[in-house]
Image 1 (cartoon, rainbow over the protein chains, first blue to last red):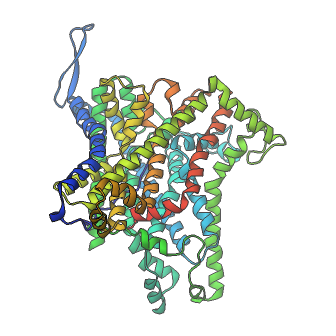
Image 2 (cartoon, chains in turn orange, purple):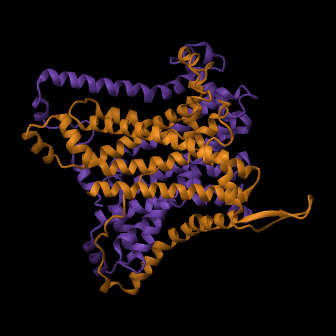
Image 3 (cartoon, rainbow over the protein chains, first blue to last red):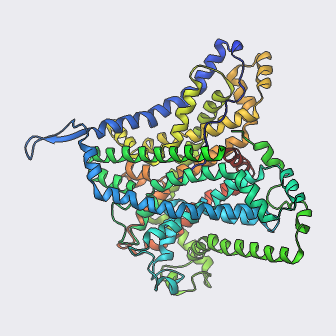
Length: 309
Length: 309
């Protein structure tokens, strides 16, 4: 699972070079600057999406039992299958529950740590910043391998705990994964929020302090409202990441039999593609990408309205 | 959205304490209590974040049998020798397959992120510094690209590449990794904030071509953003799991994460792989930790640009 760190809403148009001076040379330069990214984006973003949509509208037909398979236009046949696929929707429900619990906990911790780093209470801030961020350098697969050993009753250094509580059982394994994801990404989210805390001009706090505000009041009334855009940003990317969960559950499958081949939506896509049933897998992918896009877009829009009110 | 790299770096970072006035604002007793509480919280979570990495380090210095039979979070008497012995076994197992995986990861992530950064920087720069028809449309497409997660594209990309008979080649993982919409977004913000239009006008009056101005003047001003884009794209490619998982069959082409995943899922058949997986996990996260530490100054201000609204 990879989460990057992008935007909240479209930025205002920055000041630009005046148009009346835009000569042929400039237009050529623009074309030259944009062409490489444009072509790659087209080839590896746009066309695959279109191709997946086309594939999802096809279906495989055979002449008799042993006839050669051929693809024919099937309309929404694959989508009917997607919507009737209980295992797929169970996996969507599972990651929704996961996100509803894990994302607030992770971002709450990230906010708490960022506020503490920004407060006068701590010593050794640089150390804490690095220590908390270090897990971000651990790829999801490696993190899952490490925690897989730490969870397993026989190999764990915390055998006293893991022999009594089976973190890899069907009941707990989802939260075992939640812990891995939290472990990896708290520090990253903390840094984004912390960076935006650092950008708040100190004069605001001094004015508040003259009015007799305490540290906690300053954090609650001034700092948190001002970093809400950064929190929204981290939330959107956590939501996207959650819906895309794959590396951690797939890796943990060798530690836990409780994770089946359709545990998360992306695992279902992978399993279906391995059958191989590419048309159905393409339909899963399209539905998943669309759902992710809509969910993060709606979240962005709805929170933006609240912030500007 | 205003990018604030400049403001963010003006404030003291890390250890720099706030004016001492803050400390005396409240009673000293309460201050000591809240200080201790803050340090306690951070201390406990430092253990949470670092213990798994520490465990990985100590475990890498043990033989397969010692992993379960010795104190888990400490070294053994002959740890030093065992560690190098483990390293030797890691790099010689299966004709040095692990070294090949590391090299593959370095190619995918190192060269991929380097090229990807240049491509994204050119595009973001053109979007920020030139006015042309379709500029907003292009930027909006890039922004929606940010919201479409890379994993959702893995299957469509696989379908496209199999049409061209290019699955199971390095290109299949390398080429799609070059595209970073988030990089374009960050480059645009940073170019708008840090490359003054007057400077470009002056360069034009001096007769410098647009492309030359970009590579000699503008990239220098955008350096912190470029390092940030590079690092995050590097991490994204290094951690990418779904794309290589679905594209590659030949072990020799695997990146290190996929390779370790493959070994990890064979542990039950080949128990000697267990200690190799753990040493390999340690070795595979070292390059990322070094990169983050070495380039810390750049990315911490670059993060501010992406996260601050």
